[in-house]
Length: 417
Image 1 (cartoon, helix red, strand yellow):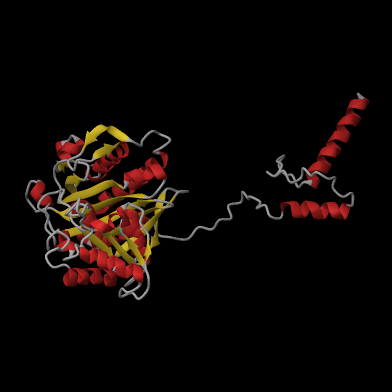
Image 2 (cartoon, rainbow, N blue to C red):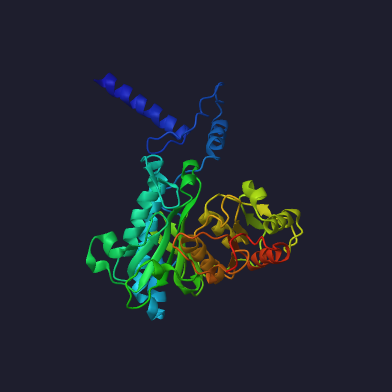
């Protein structure tokens, strides 16, 4: 028995010496194999101490004391409460806009799990009205936003989605006639650039809200309004961070989702786009299919002979929200012109071009078809497409000037607004 006690004491002493030598705490050895040396360590105590200090000086020591300091930022909910209190005409939209933020948080989580939860790929071969094969993610996100707009109160009477063939009344979406009333209608593209997810690239959601004609039953004609009559526009960007950018018609504000608390915080108050910028976001693969004015404009940007006075840099992700957001923050121009294959462009006026043009204008920028202001165009049907140019006012103005000087009868094939 005495021998066993002596052995245990010696073993304990050896363990304590080992832990002291290699700075082991809480019974954990730092995750490195540098202490496995090919040559014996020096027997000198001072050398041993120096070696052990040098061994771990480059390894950051994690702490559990929560030393990360959070900024004191206003929440999205508080922002809405104040803005809707100041503007009584928007008070009925407050629950709608809170519901939109919740939908963005849901989609943000879904996008992150798309590959692991088998949410990527075709939705069984279904094709939408534009002749495009629907993806699983498109269907899921469309359902989320249909319910976000229709299920949060009595403000929204009907919705139009890029994924739906026809306008849908909220009573139909919710299966309850109690939801058929409302003073507004909403439009949205639930997941823009969904194919980017396969390569872990950014995607986004675009939405807008129009005032409905009082006392009328909403139908397709209710949605065929110019963008000038839009009262709210916004987008959600799902990227390195999840951002919600919103305009209520009096400036643009940005909110970043804090993943620790699951709340959007007011990180970008009063966003202003630079007057001009060095970024252009065009699909260069279509360059030879663009009209002559667009090709001349892009050549000027690349050669440095444009009005900004220096060579521009191409930044193109292939998702409207991601590319337009980059231009909004850094300045420049985004474009999806008409091509031989798509003579009216590819972006939908109602769901994409109008909301993004309103955001750009409210931030001090511009939105153009190449021959006129996007927000002045009256759609003739809900899925109408239009050539779209968005960005800094100097860049977009110069692009319009190229159409004036070099366009002739070939004005983006989209017609004048």
